[in-house]
Length: 545
Picture 1 (tube, helix red, strand yellow):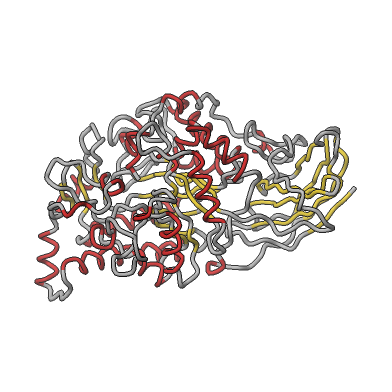
Picture 2 (tube, rainbow, N blue to C red; picture 1 turned 135 degrees about the horizontal axis):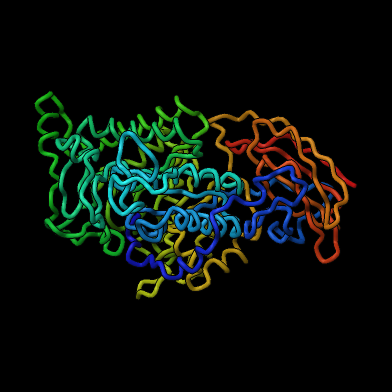
């Protein structure tokens, strides 16, 4: 995920972060106003957000559009947020608000926020120290005190967006860190499970105590916070490096074949020998994969026991196992090098969504985007969500830069496949900066209106009860009074303007929504449904003047 760190840039980002850290106006639902957040694109301010298509006509509207649209927000090395460490909390909150407002205006419906960059935390934790990327010094609490994760969750939810908490499972210290590990950091409390590898420190996946610690950290967040998902990235065993002191990892994308260069062995000799002495029979590579597999399975089962509705997503490197690849695909093997058997995780249903990092262009034959996409779809025998990661931050000023059209076309390719219903942008910085007009192009072509997150029926399929709705003429449009939204997190609204249906989504805490007239045309009727946090939709109810 940190491949794009050097290109992230903060100057344009800072210019986009002038919002004040206040909740959107719709947090005061039921006040009788429109309840729309400035820049949030919610129903009430204007129907400019809903999709407009001359085909959306008829007595009844079509099914609600469904697509997971998200962006990663990296905290490691201050790639995305906060723009630099040790900003005052008010500035950090303002930057978070700016990101969420931009995401909402673009019709994204989820944020994947990095909450654990390097065995540290951007939230108060008894298990790990505060991150230096937040406060400027590892272990130093924010002043004045606040809970960034709780803030992000609340602000996402009042905008009707999901918040997925993103954890790095094994990294213990990043090369961008500048302050010493805090006394409570695992490198100090359990040094026997931490290894130095190049410029970084890693928890050894072969150490039971390391895996247990990561599981404890994740489940602690699941218990204490109202997150919608748990997300882990592509860093399992570290990306191999050539020699001590090399940066490691980042070269895998641009030179995925690794050129057959000699690699430094990860220093897990102690745990490997202990396994052998205990009667273990696997070879070293298979043993490493088993270590990671056990963590993935226990995370998934642990989440299910705590909160059955919290989805578990994994974002592995985008090229699969060497022995299963389609003809012509070449490159770095996460299976052999990172010991990540993502195909097995799909096969066993140990995740709810897979977000393979498909970070190459459509036309780059050895790593062609459509071919890799189809490969992962072919591995998905259990019907889990495949929501690929897009390298939107590759839109930059380098010779390898993507065009904005490349990202738009990749979205089109995914939509041409019947079993792909979502994607995630790496990272939000590119969308905040509108690099080469990508944000404008996505809004104009790909995201003309909002969409509901697709359901996950294997986690539960009981629909919430239908809402109640009544309508009246408002000074500026059609006022909807909404009720009976228990078990719902959102209300889906189809509104009929003349002969045309337009779609919008509002958080379920909104008791009144005003659909404003547009160009003198009022909304005269609506079809409304309640949607729960698993995406299950109630029966529809209608109302008209």
